[in-house]
Image 1 (cartoon, helix red, strand yellow):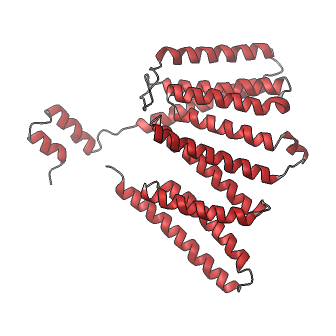
Image 2 (image 1 turned 90 degrees about the vertical axis):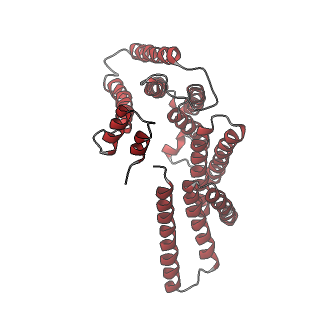
Image 3 (image 1 turned 180 degrees about the horizontal axis):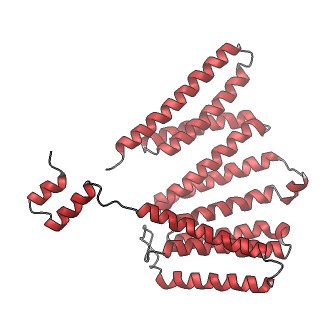
Length: 321
């Protein structure tokens, strides 16, 4: 059976050089290493920033602190000079990297911001007093960089820093001294931030602004929301309210995500809904015989695994060639 590029060549649409090139790809004589090279570059950026942190930590007593901070700030300035020089104008649509190294330089600059803040807070004993605000400032910087220069990795850093700001504000450093606070506040915060992130992603889609960022916001939002509401089933005071809320919202998300073929969100909601439903069932039928509970666990878990496996198979089948 003739391949598509053979037919195109015979019809005169492809030149001989184009046909020979596609033939080599089809015969696996030419193999793309695009993703492997990108992975190596990202690993290189992470190793470089880790190495800088280790050098600072190991030589903190030998090198002047002001000199170390100055070197990091100068390096940060050089990175952002490179970014500003090569950056494309802002656009609401997804943009390609203007240079082969632009995305990695931007990620390096963002990680270097964390290194500078961490060094200053630790060195000058400001960790306990200003760690929340450093998280918030970092989040603002990362959100600006992500939207201005179109980088999903930096966006993920911004979401993480923003969530850390709220988490630290309700669970302060005194945890190290076993001075715990009401866990209910932490559940409410996680649920609220999760909903906020998910709605932000939905708003970006609706307003057609950086729509490729929507998945990152919604993914973080659903994970945080379902983890928070699930933990409230076992640690919250009004666990029944959380359980029914989790079942209802999980049902809505499963229906919507299935229609939109957002299978990852479908799996999140199905697992969270299953846990909440089981929690309610345990409370209602706690005196049921062990054999019945064993049968329920085996059948329900088997059904859940089968459903996930079918979703993965369907996603592979619908994957574009």
